[in-house]
Length: 84
Image 1 (spheres, one colour):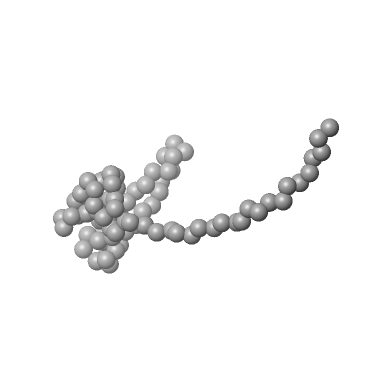
Image 2 (cartoon, rainbow, N blue to C red):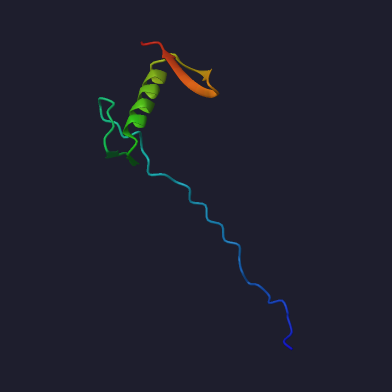
């Protein structure tokens, strides 16, 4: 019968930390319209344009208020903002 024995391990723990990104912005043109592929962003054009609007409002010190209302057990967002 074969004997069972522990084999010494020479496995080293390898940890690689290389977190980085190639994203440089929202990929918007000078009119705040999303470009198909720009600044490392691809797709989600409407979401990027909406994010650009929020960034612009924050930069111009406008207020943005997002509240939620409950309707049939679902939270519905209601956005109100002040135009500068």
